[in-house]
Amino acid sequence: MWKNGEERPPPRVGGDIQMRALGMKRRGSRVQDAGSEAEQEDEEAEKEDEEAEQQQEESEQEMKKKWMRQQSRRREWQQLER
Image 1 (cartoon, rainbow, N blue to C red):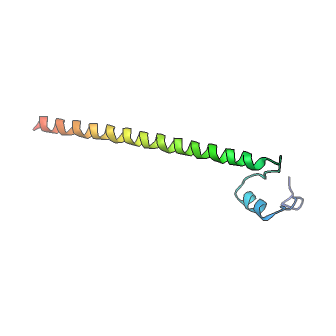
Image 2 (cartoon, helix red, strand yellow):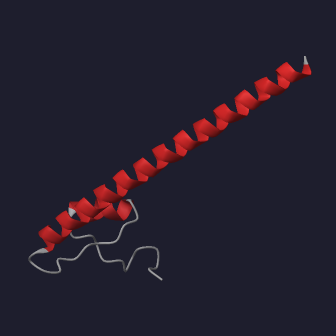
Image 3 (cartoon, rainbow, N blue to C red):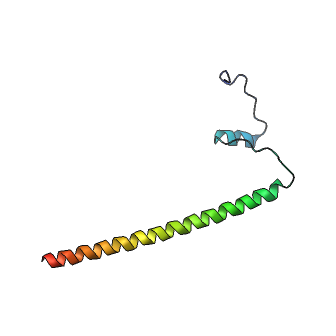
């Protein structure tokens, strides 16, 4: 245990404090081209976000179509009952 923070090493920089507050771990400097890796990760994350948004839009459209079909069936049944 950390003995209530007495033996915990202090954070090194302000960004580290913010990341710890968010519950994220530190990112060490691995290699010099880490910047390009980060850019690739960002691009991949953007693509995944776009794909997720597109899938959500498609599912919303399908749900709307399904709801419209149900409503039209209900109207038909109501007309038949009269």
